View 1 (cartoon, rainbow, N blue to C red):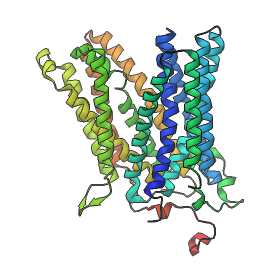
View 2 (cartoon, helix red, strand yellow):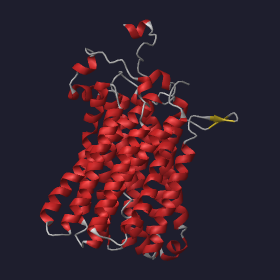
View 3 (cartoon, helix red, strand yellow):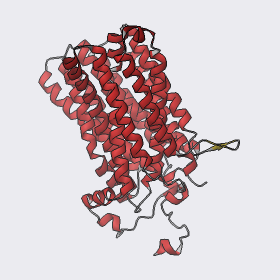
View 4 (cartoon, helix red, strand yellow):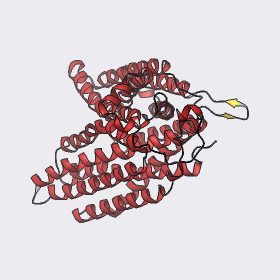
Length: 452
């Protein structure tokens, strides 16, 4: 194997953790401050978070830019700087909204969340592309799991540590904590990336076809690739199904099962624990241990979607069921299984994404990754809105909360069936290794085909 070592993959995971640390403060902590401490309408942070997702439609353009230069590190560092700036400005805007300049604060918040979306687009797309280019095929699922687990750890550590320093709340404390987290994220990212990509720097030809190709033509070329197009649709459908339950699971537990706010929060913890377990299980995809094979990335993706469908069908059954059925339904176990299935399919899908990024014409890896990242962001944002809107509509039509929530869960289950069918027809090039995907090294021997 000539791709990245596990130590280098962990360094990229550290960058992902830094990215997540800024995002969690911006999308979660500022959300809570606006709604609770400032008593602003909950719609305001909801729209700002939706804006940061909408801006991520720029991901294909960011990926194309990194393809042109054949270097990902400048885009990752630049993206983190933009993200960190947006995160800090978001805290400043929140302080202004609670002070004497609410209008200026709102305008600054719009700018801040746009910067957050742009920063995530540049850094996240280029980081995944670097992983896809430099990780050997047998390690892809494990690499995806390691990077995402480190991101989740980054969420948890940042939320816990920042939360302690924010009490007692004051606008000054909020800005100081946000500024410190943003500065640490940039510095750690720069250290983690130090000379990591430089050992495999591509020999960029000034007159290469990539530099002369316009973005729209490159995007259209990628879209014409059957596997890239199918995978884009799969990502969108699966992300809508994955995220549609995010905003209704806790209300469902409270209204139908009588959970207290504390119990419903713990239920989310059960789900996240299951997701983490599923990620670790899916890390075995494509590997053999003690002579035992653990299946392909496509198998884990398909069956992860099927298992997610079954778990959501269980929630729907509990919602549609009569009172004795609901009272005895193992809700926590059901939610844990849903988390395991979600985690397994998502890591297998990311591993497939890394494999497919280099499948097709060379020099388009970032553009492909950006296209899939945009589909993920739009699907994730749309899923939350669709889930809440459908639950309200169903409740209005049916008049009972249980069946209303159950209708949404059933619709999600059907979306996962569609996602599984799409995943079955995506050809993941299992034979492509990290060596095959590596750019030509300056001074390295080339084959006759490469020279031509």
